[in-house]
Length: 410
Image 1: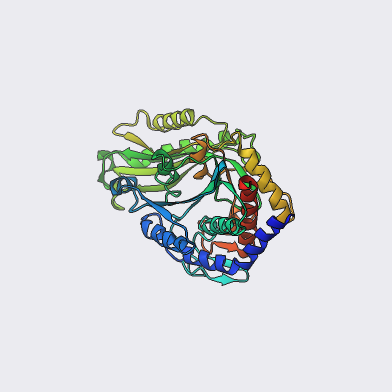
Image 2: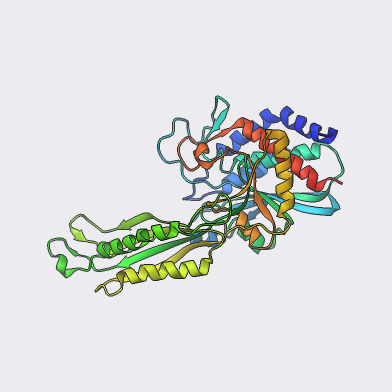
């Protein structure tokens, strides 16, 4: 390790208590989505980075677009750190919106308490942790005072839980940013180079309500919906036979995550709404999959008297696939992880879907790497007592900082 690299690591160690305190501040501001009132968090983060002498551009998504989307407010942030000409612009992206805490917490979900080397709180691991990772990696880089070329952009966005279209998707669509390379929020012990695509549909089954004592006068929407459920879950054995060639990704999945319907115990249901999720491996064609799922649903109730089905797409996210240029990111992250973690970390795919694919869709090489454990279940992400090992935050910050030095040093 050369002198500059050691200085970088020493700076991060010297400022680590400050980094933890910064993360606590970021976690303590709720951003439950739904309802998705996330602009206050963005404003607070913009104020926080101003203390470092940085200016955060506040890009508010128009209120009508946000409401139509099902959220209350979105302000995305871009912090631009330009250096000398001749190098790449590297964007670092993390999202601040989170799923609501839910039940079962033994630590306050917005307390950001530290106990036995772990910080507890909603988004401690996914992905407010990487607000801290990326900010302190860039601060460490700039503290060197070494000549740099290219630039860094910090993209702090607020729409990952609803699909990202009004987060990074909006920044890119509005041509507010066009980076050359992207590192998006991830975990410390692997570099994610690919992820699944995702199709989400809302299926509304219309029938005719009727008195429970005279069901023959009605058309039972729930009975029809049961046929759809059987058709969906009957497909699972076939989906398990489809295998991805990407390490870390297995087979497509499909489930119904929510069911709403009926009016009362003694009334034949006149309407039932199903919300379903179909994950696609990178090798699948999303358009063909959607056509197949729609046909499966329609065929399940074909010929039932008095039954009509509406199918509305909620989300169609593309897969993340490795693009030419991403190998630079992968090799640098792996090399420095070997130094910092003392082990080789793999480059793999994940069955999740994330905002990284929005950059990939526009031809920008993107990988996922940040602070976190070896697996999602270890972090309790999206569950009670979400937590982050503080040593993983320290190590990920060092790996990212060393990688930025690789990419941007003169």
